[in-house]
Length: 174
Length: 354
Ligand SMILES: [Zn+2]
Ligand SMILES: [Zn+2]
Image (cartoon, rainbow over all chains, first blue to last red):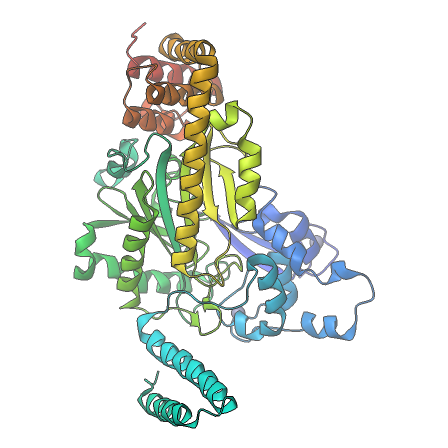
């Protein structure tokens, strides 16, 4: 299917928009999508955070000499929702939560630019969180263990080792 | 229709009591973005998948667990007319995004409209809590409690390292957007506002005007919110916002005192003129009414005017918006008619019947 805007490039983005119960389908290519950001649901009205993000994400912007690494990244694709990295970089939004996994190798620089950080330190969901909390505690203890070994405090080290074993046994399973 | 009581009165019940620093801080808002495991985000979700999201989320807040937060009502966006959607946006109960692109979207509201839960907005779930005045901590306590209730029934998309996974990379981590709406006329009048706003930007917060096009502030009202959602705890985000807003309040206070000390006559004249114009004008554009209502609010705080009460001014800020005017005076309206009805509403509310 060709892009309904330019009629030249193949349509790679497909959207359905419903306004007043009227369904409109859009089949557009990526360059037209970028130009006509308002066609994409939720990006109404010119400038948006997403167009800003897509500026940050766009690897093509880095110059014509697309190196092999950039090409590999462009080839990434989320196997759950089908979004490609190239779509993600244009929309500035993920298609599903699995995208985070499939695009993981590219996210640290992005998150560092947007948030100045790459890892969550806030609230944990209670159920999944119990396990994560336990893991975090074990990691902490392991670091302390390394330290006490380095400082030759073997009594403390032994205590820490026992604590870690105990926690590993008690760790709630998902 | 009873379901539309939300669009009949301009002021949500939660707005009627002041909250702390209400002479400068209009409201505090918490928004938490959450998504369900496995299902694609609303951007890519099919109609069936949006329906599935609704099926999982909607019943949670009609159950017993939520009873502590009042009784809730669900409104499906597809079933609302355009005008009602517009009014819900003007009251900040739904986002423009949900109103404009409401595929499978819905909002769950409690009676006093202090809790607004959006389904199938940019994320599957957006929990929003609104409090009057400066109450960011209080608003967070409620928002996180509501989050816990949802989490008791559904599985969130959550990652060990990235936190709560959201559609937009700018919300990942805590998914928390905490914001405070402030009225800063004296900082604007004394030309200190830009310096203050750029300082605010440097500590990881953003500032937007409200109801304005783009980032233009209408009526000297600004919304200050956190920019960073990853790598800070919710507590750090909230305390940072709280402390910055407290400092801004202090600056605005000082600027008001200085205005009164240095140019009492000029400022009194300006405020009383605005009162006169609002009470007698026959045609009133939105931008002017917002500016003059801002003068009134300042006048009441400085003791230059005895009334109207702040709650009436809050109400007028909402009622003078285009959607609300149409809701009150008739669906079809030209811009000029709107300006006429706006003037009529202001005259009637502020005392003069001429
Ligand atoms: Zn095209
Ligand atoms: Zn995906």
